[in-house]
Amino acid sequence: MICRNIKSKMPDLLLAPESVSAEVRAHVENCAECAQELRELEATMAAMDAWEAPEVSPYFDGRMAAVLREEQQNPPAGWLERLRTRLTFGEKMNLRPVAAAALALVIAVGGGMFGVLSDHSAPPAQAASPVIQDLQSLDENSVVFQQLNSMDQQQDSGDNGAANPNSL
Ligand SMILES: [Zn+2]
Image (cartoon, rainbow, N blue to C red):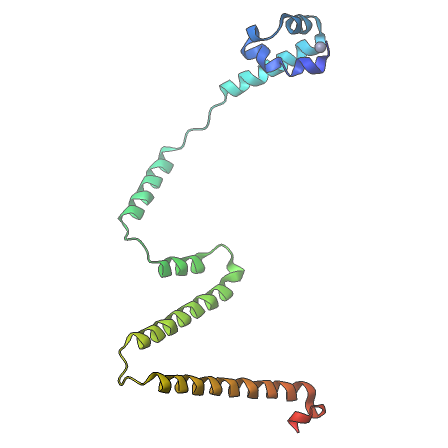
């Protein structure tokens, strides 16, 4: 019998000796190395049995209970308040300016969205015919396209200078 095979049986040998074959038990009794190994394992298990988790101090318990009570009595914070608190007291201090800017953006966009939505939900002062509405939207689109084009041209002339014939 090989000692390496015996080692895998050692926990059984300690916890449930009757489940281990007589052959293994005989080997451990006659092999100094395996006997030593068994004694060490036994000592480790005894130490683990004796180990106890340290008691939490009464002060910690009382303090924790007080904080929990406080939190339960507080009204639930809105998501904006929670986000602001997180940004203000967040762990990653170097991200604060970026995060604050992002929050400002969220608020600005949120406000803008609200404005747009409330505009649309309001009844129109005078109902325009579908054709007029189409023409209006076409007009708006063409204005947007003109703006985009002029931006493109500015971009081109800035990039290419006199080499671009369109800018001359
Ligand atoms: Zn052995």
